[in-house]
Image (cartoon, rainbow, N blue to C red; front, side, top):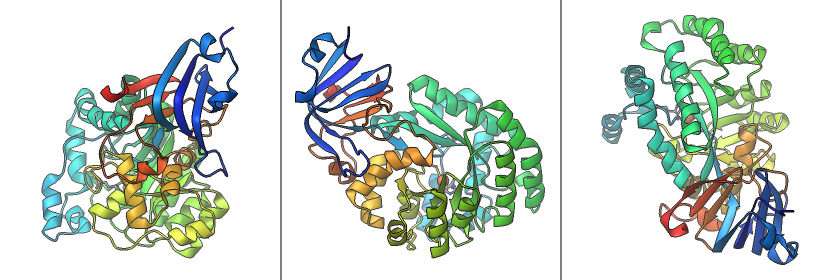
Length: 412
Ligand code: DI6
Ligand code: FE
């Protein structure tokens, strides 16, 4: 009788078990069966025949094991890039000015509409691979660069194909209310009418979206328009998330809470009422320091209030071609510490347990028996190092539900 399908020994572990801080275990062993953790603890507590009876035994040479990272907010499926805009911004143009001149999100919409599904997959896969090499085994991917039914569905199909190709877990979010497409210029309400009447039901019926998001902002959609999208999503049984209060305070955090949303993302300008509403609704605050950095923002998210009201904070890359061309979740964690004042522990929990919560996933994000064996192995002595280096070596190995997804040469 085999004790485990697989067993890792010669490792240290950071379990992030609730209420136990880092949950460090020196000289740990981790075993799983059928993709789920069944043993996480000191090696000396293993059953005596565990090594002899396990199907696979991996000697980790003292690597540190953490839950695999979870990037809970990305726009990584898109075509083209926007380097000229980057240069314009460095010369003083604002993100809003570029958007109003027909660039910004709509520049990527033009490129994405023009790309066929295979081209879109070919351009997007390297970005997902980069995140995987950085320790990510679960990835959220939004649509929102198609802005018509056909192109939005194509983006969502590409997101699912990334999962199939890499073995990574992908959660998809329909972001049809990301920007106003050119054919609806000056008719935002008509676009939202069409989105609610046609796109949302078709997307829901396709089964290609796990959640619905919107960009509630002066250069995006109004709170009233966002509310209509959310109300329709709710009737279709889809959970909601929101790009909330990124550039101005439109009460986005409270709007998320009013719909029991999974998360309010960005939230630099959220007010005290919004933070309290998130706490009451148990919605996650997703912090996106990459966009804050790239846009040269100065208004920081209300971290002290979020802590005071015990709102769960997640950290994500927001990987997108406009405001956050970021391909390392560890870098987002580091920047959440240096730019927003998170502790290294908050950053690691933000990219694991709280990121899982932001996606509505209760089965991962901590090293606890019963949860998925989604693991990342690192050549570091302490997990705080994940929020410390700017760049450098990524994960040694990544497992998803106990299956190896990624192994770098140093980990062989
Ligand atoms: N906020 C963001 O950070 C991204 N979308 C959004 O609503 C930016 C998307 C882009 O500029 O392409
Ligand atoms: Fe975003």
